[in-house]
Image 1: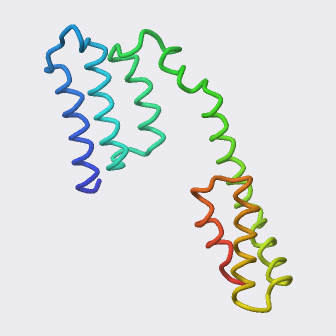
Image 2 (image 1 turned 120 degrees about the horizontal axis):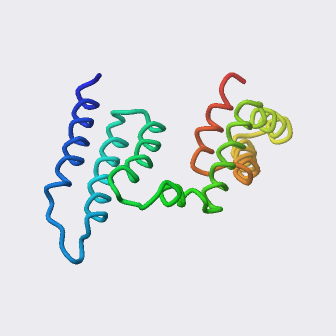
Length: 153
């Protein structure tokens, strides 16, 4: 394990242990204190990537129940019932499907054939391809997706 990952893991453990020594009050309950400690530990784990991201996320949901931050497993999983979460998951799934199928490459080749006369028309073709593909996939991943698809023409 790399130094940064092991340091991140140790710092996350420190936050999980230190949260039990933070005094509670009327405004900061035990559940709130434990939630803050878990939040800091998960942020450290995500930033340092001491554990894989999927394991960190699943572990954080389980630790919410174990530390008494939420009353039940269903309460810990209730944040995943939002429609927006599933919309984002589906959009990433569609993005992955598009990257497996060379759709952007086909679109770029077609636009190069149509607009291939000058560099300004090529830029216009790239902008059109970006706008078409961004209508069905995440805009965050789009520049990387198009840059990879334009290799090896």
